[in-house]
Structure formats: structure tokens, C-alpha cells
Image (cartoon, rainbow, N blue to C red):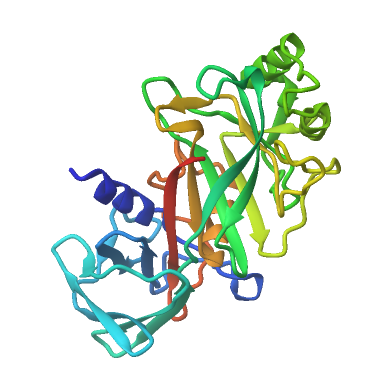
Length: 341
């Protein structure tokens, strides 16, 4: 199966839940009541969008009853995309545009209407500014960077998780970003990370020489900002806005540009790094940029302990939060980038 499509299916099955605080409501359902309509749809940058439409399961039922006869439309700026039932779910062929608001409308066979909206995130990246190369060896040595969010014109809702491969995956992430969610902080600090020990040793063994073009203040600035940063276990959630001020109390300075700040820079480090030909340094992290309601949904899911090994996993359908008017469920949007450079 196509990897992108598989990820899309997995991402879209992160189902049920929540918008902004004013629109979040808790729902108590009893087996004697008529069960509400459930809509689960997360728009992605894949060419096919999927939507699940069914009636909520009663306590004495083991399966969900799919709704196969309805009119399902997602629209934006005068354009609309109709979904068709494919025998297992609803689908439509279109690619959402960055920074665009989408409206969902579902008209049921009995005339009832269900609707919701989401704004697809802007096109963004997290990129690093090199400030120090230990041993001046960009492939064999260790590199320090400050990271910035590129393309953010308003506010961004970001999740970072480890990418699994044959070398394992990231389990501990450090940051000094002031918008980080600290609910999953565990014991340990930056100086306990394997890579930080390598950086500390290489700098100690090869301190900058007076004529090397390096200034010790660059390294000391980074080191002082890193020391004591706690571990975020398994994932990192960040709320970032375009006017973000650095989370570091130390000056941010670039290599060969002493006392020149890195605008909006923050530290991002993990217990696993990769050196790949053509790219001097990578964090093996997948970066998800989410719509606000989907960010809140994931926060509730993860904190409820319903997540599996990775963020893009199948979750419980039994959460009692929604941003769907006339029903329950989630209509959100998200896309991802692999690796943080």
C-alpha cells in the first residue's frame, strides 16, 4: 500500500473530538436514547480525503452502524467537493490548500443537517540555524542549532513525535520553547542526552582557537540555555505564534556573527540524531501541523491514555467531546513533515 495513503488513513482515524473551549461540550449518552450521528474527518494533503459517518454505538452494541445514504459536502471559497460512499467509508478526490477554511455539511436522509468547519494549517517548516560545529566536522562531529518555525503567519499548533526505523526511535525530546505543553515531562535533562555528552566532550577536547573564527561565547550561550531542560516523553506539543519571543534567557548568537540574535529561535534536541549525506544534521522527528480543534482533540486523547505507539495510530471512538454541530465527532485538518532540519 502507498505509504502516504496509509499514513492518511491512520491520521484520519484519530477520531472524535473538540474545538475551542467555548465549543467543547461533554456528552452523556444512555442506551435508551436515540444515538447521535458521529462524523470523523481529518483533512490531509493527500489526494483522497476520507470521512466516517455512523451512529454512535449503544452500550449493549458491539458494532457501529454506518450511514450510507446522505449528502456529504466539504466547501471553500465557492468550490465544493462531494463525498461518495465507497462501501466502507465516504471519500472525495481533492487536495486541501494551506491556510484555507473548509466547511463540512452533511444532510441526512431524514433532512437533518450536521455541519462543522476547520482551517487547514499554513505551509510551515521547522528549520535549524547552525551556531557551533564541534571539531569543525559537519559529518563526524556534533552540531548545535537554534530552531525556528518558518511560514507561521498567525499561530501554529505543532506536535513532534519520533520516527521509527531500524535504528529505533526518539523517546525523549527537550525544548526551551515557552509554548511547550509540559504535561508529559519526565525525569532527566538535556545534559543526560547521549548527543549532549558528545557535544560537551568534543568542545572540551577541541576548544575554539583565537584565530579559528569561533567565539567561546557562542558555545557557552547555547550550553547555558540547554542545561537543565527537562525531557518530554514520546512527544512534544507546542503552541507557537508568529510573534514568538525566544524561550532562552541566554543571548542567541550565530556562528561567525557574535551577538547576532536568531529571531524566534528555540532549542530542540532529542536522544537520537541522524547524519545523512546531503544534510549535515537531522532530528528524526515527524512534525505535525494541526488545526486548532484537532490540536485540542489530540491533547485530550493523549492525556486520557488512549494513544498507541505513534501519534498517527487508531484511537478510541468513545470520547465525549466534539466540534460537530448536530452530532458528535471531529472535523479537523493536519499535515506532517518528516525530519527536523
